[in-house]
Amino acid sequence: MRLEDVVGQEHLTGPDGALTRMIRSGSLGSMVFWGPPGTGKTTVARLLAGQTGLAFEQISAIFSGVADLKKVFEAARLRRVNGRQTLLFVDEIHRFNRAQQDGFLPVMEDGTVVLVGATTENPSFELNAALLSRARVLVFHALDEESIAKLLSRAEETEGRALPLDEEARAVLLRLADGDGRAALTLAEEIWRAAGEGEIFDADGLMRIVQRRAPIYDKGQDGHYNLISALHKSVRGSDPDAALYYLARMFDAGENPLYIGRRLVRMAVEDIGLADPQALVITNAAKDAYDYLGSPEGELALAEACVYLATAPKSNAAYLAFSAATRAAKEHGSLMPPKAILNAPTKLMKGEGYGSGYRYDHNEPDAFSGQDYFPEKLGRQKFYDPVDRGFEREIRKRLDYWAKLREERRQGGK
Image 1 (spheres, rainbow, N blue to C red):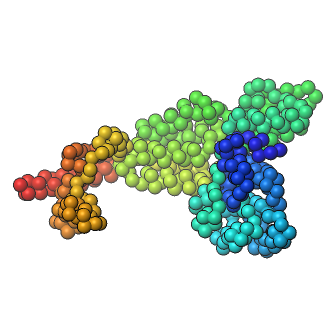
Image 2: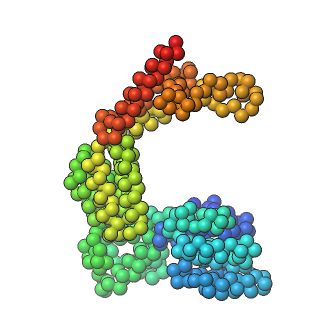
Image 3: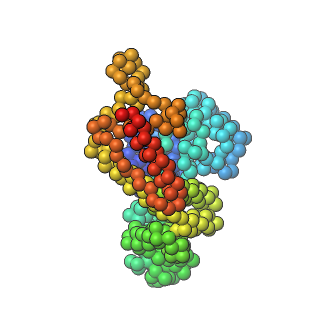
């Protein structure tokens, strides 16, 4: 097997992929593979070592400590003395603490090892900045159903026999894998072991074998979009019971909970907005809680956020304001801001009037100067119109107060 045979990661392993280019250039630097389980990170690391002539060494951060790392580094140094470099593959690299991660830096810098770390977590948050600055992050994608189908076809070729599934059961199997190639192959092994002579399983038979609930809908088709739409509209319509019903259906169908978490965050900024500024805080916290707790414990955090959104005061004022401001920016993007609010870092700019006449609001009565900040040719615009609900009722009072002060100061300046 070669790198180009890896399925589902063509952006890395295809003819013009990032890893293909590295091999072609003859320069292989340290890397971090970031992606969900079962997407080929370990396999790709092995293939890289094989195609570049590097010795392959693998450790797991879960089962390894400082003593293990020292042994691996010493063996790599010995190989280097004998003219061979080592590709060190570190699975779950984010499990190493900061001090342990720092231990990789000297052997990366002196060329003792080419480090390839694998992680399912965001490297920006979980890995040291010093380590990240010496490694290129490559993103692995969850396998789509076409890629899973290719994997199963290869498994059938290797086994010399077809999976004993009818067409519907095969489609269910692709969805059960949920983007995880390793899971797909494990399921295939279970099916072969369970099948009797000449037996073909339908969808119900498949589910009895794997002891899982069948997906209620295909996450790539109408059912997926119908339920997320129903959830969103139930939240927007302030119906927590209906929202919980659709949320539970999505969990039961095997929807990715982090996808649901992202959609709840979107609802917080689109439909609640500044009517309840805590909505965004709570949905982000729920998403992080699920990421920390996993399933099923973390599902309750998402359910709690869902109820909070459904019962919160609603406003799309910020959403509409941003849309209007975006349109104005596209139509009038060439207009220059007033010179009074621009800095004058050079004498020439100061001579041209930059910064002249600017009034520092903190030095003004009520900490409000009432200046105009829009380009003169555009004039004052109004994009944000807060509703008279929730916290935006208070925001409206502030805006009305400032509008009154602005007019008073404009009249006073005449």
